[in-house]
Amino acid sequence: MKDDPPLPSLAKLDEKLRAAEAKRRKTKTRSEIQGQGLGFALRIGVEIVAALIVGVGIGLLLDWWLGTKPWFLLLFFVLGAAAGFMNVFRVVGGLGGQVGYRKAERPEDEASDSPGGNGGPDSRRDG
Image 1 (tube, rainbow, N blue to C red):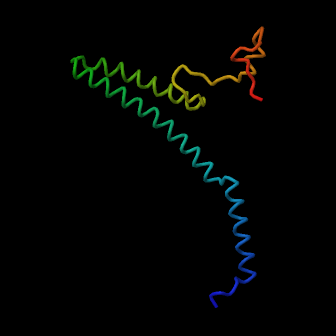
Image 2: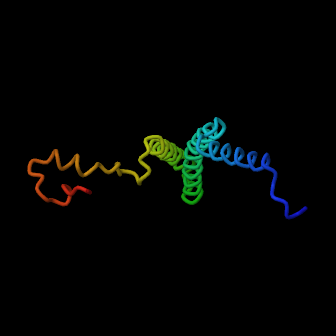
């Protein structure tokens, strides 16, 4: 009995299950989309809070070391808040690089705007 081939109904069921699984993998479910949004919101919150904690920590240490309470705390709180908002701005804008970096423009756009556009390193085209 162990060597008997599977029943035809089981083979059809297995085929249907594989097709359904493949279809499910191709489409994102609503919970996956919501999970991505929740992860993005959590990242924004962590960016702000982490920058504030670092700023306040540095301010407290400098105030304790130099005896200038509360001036460095206030200064680094403001700097930490600014850094947190800059990080959030970069994340939301999709820049991702370091501060001051922009997304790279396509070389074709720069070559068409330049007056000569004759063989410089920026006028190369792929293809």
